[in-house]
Image (tube, rainbow, N blue to C red):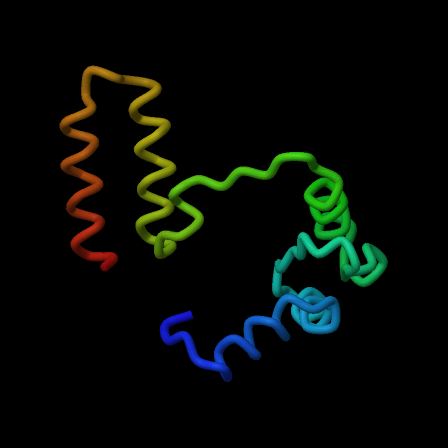
Length: 107
């Protein structure tokens, strides 16, 4: 929410309802998953989405990482950089410089 207004609060309240979540997940190829436990698992259009939603709604802990809020270009670079770091931790400064270049382009 960019501005705390009554209309914005009303929209946020609606978007968290099972009805809004069902509309989102039922869109073909949306890839959307809801953690709202009131959204029927049977509403998912494919078995992969169904299974992911089942895992998420049944989990006691769900964690996200920084890449979940990054533009796709940056998120892809971040995930690649994590793998590069695991392969060559001594190259951290080079890896970070590469990420900084992607950041300049992505943002």
